[in-house]
Length: 444
Image (cartoon, rainbow, N blue to C red; front, side):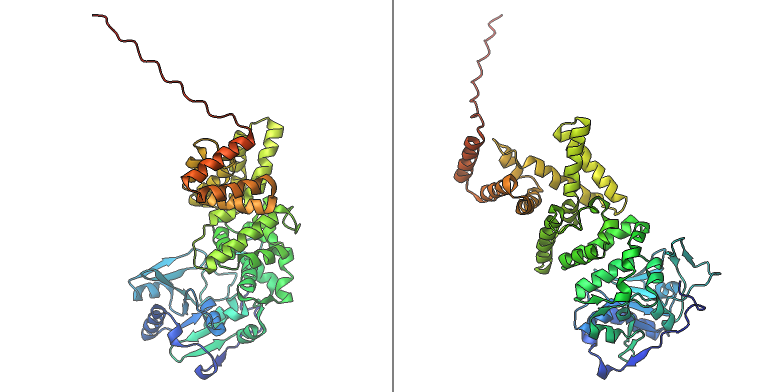
């Protein structure tokens, strides 16, 4: 834990004048500028900080803008009618401008044993962090060196407290402070290190990377809801495949997805092959502006554990396929949500995708047309297609059949069904015998 006593060498800021950096107000959100100007006019300091400054220095367009100030959350709320205060672990102000939210934080300070505003658990993880301080202390509390750069709109300067500019030049992800302590304070920093390396095409410095192998288990202490949000950032930001490979390299997938721990490190395993196919397709969709759902990713991650558990239930409990599969779906989802919370709006879709894998092989009669009208047919079909690429054989043939059937006209569809009936040896449908007319009642 960083404290005034243990922080022997405080970070010293290097001021970079406007002429020596590439950040322009034209690249900054108008709403972020409004927030900083109003704070300045009220007598407070205000800076852009973190990922938005890093991205601007890299020449990228930030997705959002974070502001830091010496005003307290209550003082911020007093200046903005469109402000709401959030957070227990660290109190934040959200300034709402329609769909855009500018997050404003108060400078974080060091902890002391006497402070009631900060608290750590037995593993050293911060569970409450409402200690306010100076900009220098705030910089020390930042996670990575390139996130400790502060842009001040009042004079257009960038203050670099941890050689963030050099880290960007070297394309390195490097923690501020002792990595062992910083990972214990917040184990999610390990996931962030991997995410930034994949997202920015950087390498993780050896001193930052080494403790990850021994501290990965600390992720089990993170609330499941927070881990769901983190996995969204990891896999649904357009670099999911490279992120997956790095997470696997540092063995960080094991504590996130215990059901896959024994197979993820086998490169040719069907689990890894399926995940890589789906993640590549997901990246392509995201980078071309198409929508994706986390349900498809989680359906992929947990499919083979469900399949294996269902087979085990059939063998050991004597259940039929339908009952075993339903129980397996519930069991695997329940176990996973103990580690990563999956909201019901996604778990319902996951179940639909899985159930369609059971239904898509049954295509006779009207079933094929009923399946085509299923609201999740496309997701189920796409999943089957990915499975076919990995498993080949009957699964690939089935996926090819559905590819033809859904794009065929009525005549071609009828022909495909007839060919299927002949191939599978199914008995032709019997014509219904006409009902006998009811005898007339002549009773008077």
